[in-house]
Image 1 (cartoon, rainbow, N blue to C red):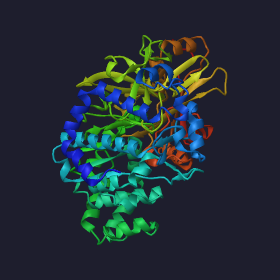
Image 2: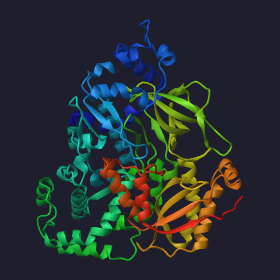
Image 3: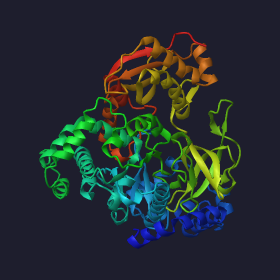
Image 4: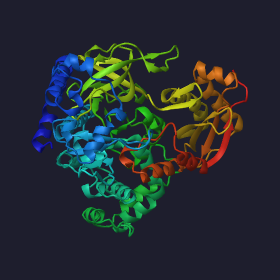
Length: 584
């Protein structure tokens, strides 16, 4: 794992490292692929593609097929069940990473080696360095970062499997690096009870409110959850601060010990200040009111997290939202070199030393919609992507994934030196589907963003959403779940049927020609919006967490596949609205 000396070197020489990486993209990529093949060409998996023993870069691209997880899963399962990792890669697997699995079912097992972990760490540190350079004085304070873990699983082989955050927060790299800048003691982060952990982390953050200059977490969904928790528990947090005593229900030994070193005396003045802020009917700007020295909010806000942008802008009171890095369980990809970019303009600069990247060209129709299949073009490498084109990313990693499709569709938006910059567009496999119509995550997000503009002048906020294809009736229809609230309070807004019908119409009008044709021809029924009460999506998150998803890596599903998840949202329904039966 990265030593304190190595971490210091990255912080001191990071910008020079970044310039070197982005100026030598082609050379670094080819060298990396050569090294991967040199090590692993003799493994059971790869050797069958090189019958003559010639495993060079070109034969790799010619002979090795592009795959999905299902193609490589038998090898991973064999390793998890006790066979040697050398059937897939030469270096020892130290751990399996779990994918988040929220949208696509059960989590996947992704191999990780010590070397692949170091590559991820380098990207995290470089990203942190770039962000800090954009905000003067951010080095002088602390970070209120809400971090959580899940219990590790043990495979029959003895290898553990966990989410990356769980593994990372237990390493010396974290303890020697980012943890030193955090308000949360390590023991509160490592607490397995998310409620106790959240309470203690918020309590330590409030006790140190004058030192906090950064507020964040891994994903925007975690911060949305944090604000809801603060709404529910601010009075009890103030009581702890006022009396100097920790709530009796905090029973985790690590949390109790950590808090005994911080909550050492009553502080009536601080408690009164926090109470006065939280008693205000409007919580607009609550984050900067509670932590007045905060310079930015730090979390992933692209992809499915973009639905939380307006919520964080409201509670943040205009503080910049920084989306630092693009990564997945399979690989780290790139970092945001323009931290001050507007949330919907964020692009990530790919770093060529983390994995070997190829890109499958994705065609777009006249309305900018990704087609169902790839084009007939051959995959292109990182140095040869074209500005303005759309691609699906394919990775070959140091940890045993070879020409593996991640499922993300990206758009090339520019270049930093010779390294391409990509904007996340959508997850290819996340679609609403009825018969021949398929509506993608990007289509849905754009349509809902237009519809919510109808509500905003009325002081109504769309805090989060999801959807599913209801095929219980014929013809089927798309159903949207919306959680709404008034800007000045958590009160459920009075819903005008005509206004909500306009929202339904706007969503449908924003969909593509194929959808409109089927809707006009009667093959799809009128779109439905179901409004749910405040906190219903927290119950959905609790459901997925109970199924093994980590709070720290929870990605709200924009399209529901689980009947149980649909039932949870239906249980919170307070109103339903439809488009007119005939449209277009």
